Image (tube, rainbow, N blue to C red; front, side):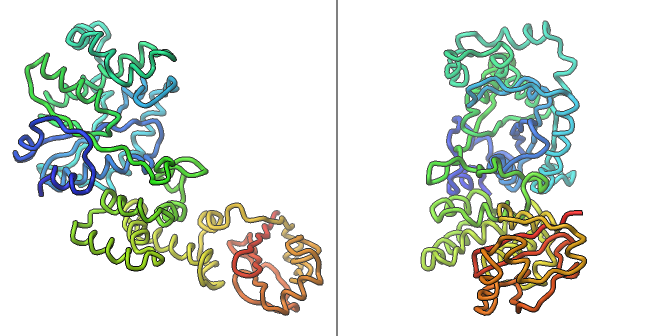
Length: 425
């Protein structure tokens, strides 16, 4: 597979230095992308770069994921309007461990010639003294050259510390180190990293007369102008503790048709023939959401596994389609709460439910879900009331056996009105 051609038809190339294709036509090239360890999980904004490394490895080359244990202690100013908070060494180490586990779901670490490798730049910066650094690195790049970078120019009015100003030198030295020690000739990254990346190629040229190359990808934007990977709750993370598999699945399932035509190329490994067929099928019946379902399935399984994907699909059916009490009972508590997040609720003492509560009383006077017990009786007779997704009669008494996860009862009126009874000790 030709790496550049593969990325080109997928719309994943923004800038590319001359000579890249010739370099990649050689066998077993080594390339790297840097990841910022500002959290113990990557979010889906990082998926573009992860997929670039996946394609790079599939093309027969060796990918290096460089975790910025040292540069993370400084903070990359690219695209930032304010100085970042500096992280401590222990926090960064914990973040690196979390990120590596996520990368292992995408890349092959099989000890073959093009096996992926994860490196931490703190391993070479930790013993690099300041005087040595400014002598060996700083003297090769002029202040004028560094000031011309967009990441610097955009901050001149608001101000920039020397710490952040020096970031491009640190990233440039990363490339030099990897070039010398790992025969790495290509750096990949997002288009906002172009200035930092070419600083590395320039340092390699000036210091050791080497030839190094750069390829960047476009920054992904949603068709409606909102930021990719963001929801009302913030970032969509790859770690299920931060973003549940259900919410992760829903993010992709709710993508617009226009966005999905891009996402299917960027975030899956389906080939052009398969993708063209899916897009054609989708356009014939867009209401079926073929693209969204395929993307959500592919990415959720890759990130979270088949079991969590199946749970997310089952949870989606509960909220938006036909489901049974058994479907509800099989959900773990985290998924259940994700599905019904924001639903109005009422707290009931466990002693009361253990004694038994009449459904009419619970619906009306006790919980306030309905305005009165009379309304509750009328709606039950009208067959519009459900308990845990099952239709009921007004004689039913709810007790501990009615609880989901030993803690919840789901009341419903019609298809869209849900109400949660939460049992408290």
